[in-house]
Image 1 (cartoon, one colour):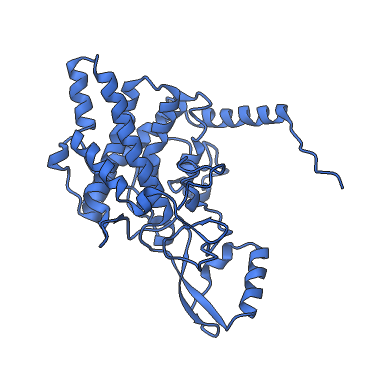
Image 2: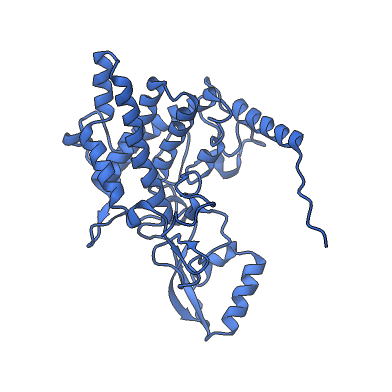
Length: 364
């Protein structure tokens, strides 16, 4: 037999790249009132799919992943304005839902803690809108705040004006998690919760096969036919047991990865501002200190060290599968819903870039 021939088509790749660049640029420009959403600016009729809203559990961020590399600064502008508006409404949500103060005295009144959840709309509503399974993603606002920062840092690494704007919402998100939301466990580890891993579930209790509980195997709807068939064969070899599934948890993998990058990005962004500040006017120094108070930078670094596994992904089994939940699955099978369309457990791989497929030493 002959080895399969690797097919490459550079002209097709180039066409796809330019087409994607055109789609983002045409739906997100400097004069745009809103960033691109799931439909861009095109909808077939008055009723758009998913109500034409903005999903913060991957979709909005994913639309802008290539903005920096594609040199689309104008496309990032409406996204940054949207994040700033969401952070403003998110201060109310942080206060009313989680008891966060307007600000923390030790970090200054300029930094206002804020939070946003799984999806929002044109008004920037930061509450968890809907069932927990879909909406209760407490780190999704922080994830969105990272998107314009990452793109602008790639485009204009020396433009501190844009950097200050992008760091403002990041600073508020850091203040919320460090000052309000993270919970200290008995061993000193800081965890998030209650929260969810976007649209996914975990096994939490075995039940009899005869049970009529609707939660039994509820998550199997997203499994592939092959995986369902495999699961059926496994169940036939075991005593009749199935599982109830849960969604609300403490410290899912996406939370740990997002917060690790959030704290890291805040510290590195502030370091860049400090370096530029050496030759900057006095008024710039004052502005920089409001965004990057040393006490908050120190708190972010300390919190990062106290994340589960020090912010590193956790793996299990002989095949080193990444855990999505710290408590889910058997020793050799920690992916309860391995065929799910949301790969939140891989956030540390991308866009987090914390681990690499070429390294065996990234996950513990």
